Length: 370
Image (cartoon, rainbow, N blue to C red; front, side, top):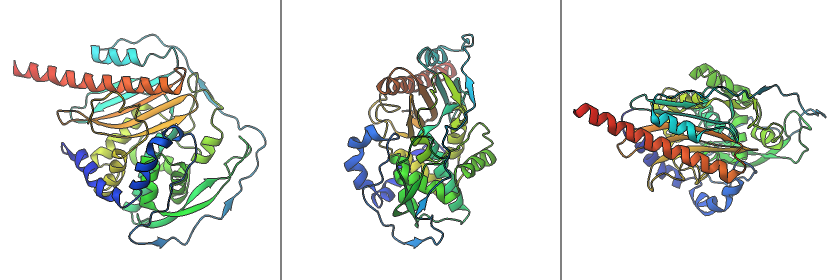
């Protein structure tokens, strides 16, 4: 991908977004921000695509999973303290200081997509993806579009959760909701982190195991896995404290996520048109204004996806630097005492990455001129 291509992807998506759910997003984004990734709330209105093709194989009107009256067994990995590592540069040491884990695990991975300079703090450790998994779910669907199995104007029903007790079934019961085009579902799933839209796409591709298989086989990222629908993930949230234990279900390492982002940026996983759909939507994300975007200079281009569950917050995506480079960033924060504190830690780490990469680039340029 040549320099500036991410910017062109983001700009090209603006007109397409205007034909979809943009008015509803603009009206509801700020008011709903506190609910993103923790509550269900479907798009406010159905948005028709220019052409309508209702797929014949729709889901049954109600899905009633087998009852499992006890909490499912979960295999956890304890968090073991390790000696403080040494870092090769003040830049890395500054990130490590911000990612200090006495109040909860923090994982960071970043890559300068021009120079290949990487930073990693607990980069190989598993963290709960929460809604950052929606990037992979959408990518799996778009891969099917590239292969001719789906079309962006195909219609699918929103998947609406039916109230049920935690751990009362292997999957949370759901019902069909409003029919929407795949493109509108993608827009809602990424820009608003809409769970009903995401589960609609997840059902369309065949479920969590299909997404896991696509990521692992297509990208070679073996520490990525999705085990549950979003409805089930949210209903059963809170069983494990991610600050003190590692639950490998629905998890990824920060470096694994950066590898996924890098392949998307370079066009390794999807066609140019499908890449534009996904990266364009990430550039229109309205969630997480206090996370990666929180402390960056006004006007900085960011294309990202947030995630929130019990005692964990995350933000992953791309940051464009003033000198035209793109940074792939994945920040996963647990603990820290509160959601605002987790958001603030993400913002501080993102700003330190931004400043550190700029400072190193300036230093390298001065060295080259000597």
